[in-house]
Length: 134
Image (tube, rainbow, N blue to C red; front, side):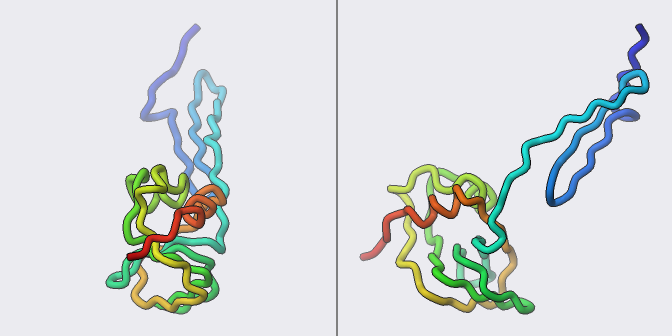
């Protein structure tokens, strides 16, 4: 049996917003590994701004560099997630160490640089963190 396992020639990655697929061809047969898709809620997002910090809430409006969030929490300090990307997927790992102030009914943010849709798991985790106040 002659296996053609030349990685460089036979491996093809196809990436898009919905899925990541890895393909490899061996002796003319293509094998596909489909990686689990992450389901996000396009309405509940994390926003990172240039100067107003990070916020999580329901996206109401996006116009240029301005966004409006409903029921938004400022993400002042989080624990148990290495980055905002992990926070948007997994939520917080250590909710008792997070510092998220009160949820505000409406906020307009200008100068956003990052908009990350959250999973339902992350949304529930962020909303479940006790209110930090002094």
